Image 1 (cartoon, rainbow, N blue to C red):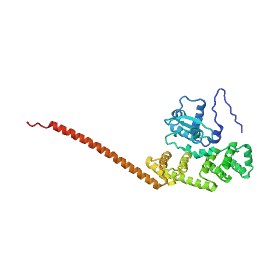
Image 2 (cartoon, rainbow, N blue to C red):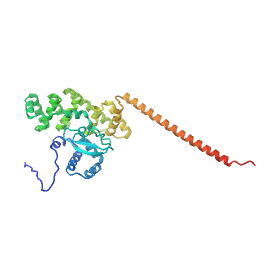
Image 3 (cartoon, one colour):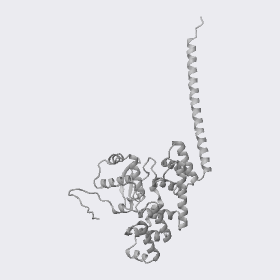
Image 4 (tube, rainbow, N blue to C red):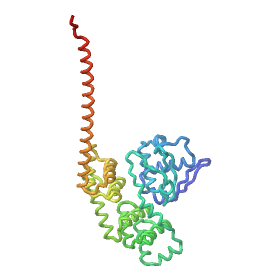
Length: 356
């Protein structure tokens, strides 16, 4: 097979794309999200005079909602920092290095982009875990490799990932082993699990490992039990939404995982939220269900019985408001009728015949 050379004509400018973006992020990202990131890189070196959500939507033939989703995704991945003005409008976008977070760079940023965009980028625990990571020197990596278990781990990783481990790959595997105290058996299962889901990005493996660490997973048995619970929740949501012929896509799984992990809701409450979504808008909507569950979280709902109490309070509040509204209308009507009778009386007096 002949080799391929890459070259360019003269007087053509090019946009530099970071190697880490290609190596660790592009494989797992939605193609439309990649387009937005690349266009922003282009704008970074050749700024658009009036860059806006609507402008980018026109240029890329997206909807504004698509642009917002892409920005939220790259914010979640830690590659973009989003700034907001006093009116809660997006006013700035900053490119971040891997491991940085929007919280680190823009501590005063107050809100996320609207339109039911899932706030998966605001996990303080993940940011905290990332900041604990350190770089290992070449000598330290060599010393680790002298351990037979670590050496075997690297070999198994190369077998699953079907490539020679890069320096970045080695750093991540050692971070999980030494920084998060994963056993080599747990780390091997982590790699196997991610690859079985179609993810061979070392960044995805690292984020999954961090999530496991935060859940207190310490061995393979714990991990398998957690994964069974996740799959059970996914299947329950699929059934509640009436989804047929497919599994949940990554963005949908992200919602379910957030409801389980970040919100801490039981499967029963998640299914109830899905059922209410279907009764209200008559179609599956993870964004709508997320809003329902956000409301329940704000009201500290942890069980179906507490939800029943909340529903009763809400209904009673509505009845009271309706009753008050009716009383106001009745009072207004009574006052109006009293005024009309007075006027009528004056008219009648004025029209009475005078006695001679």
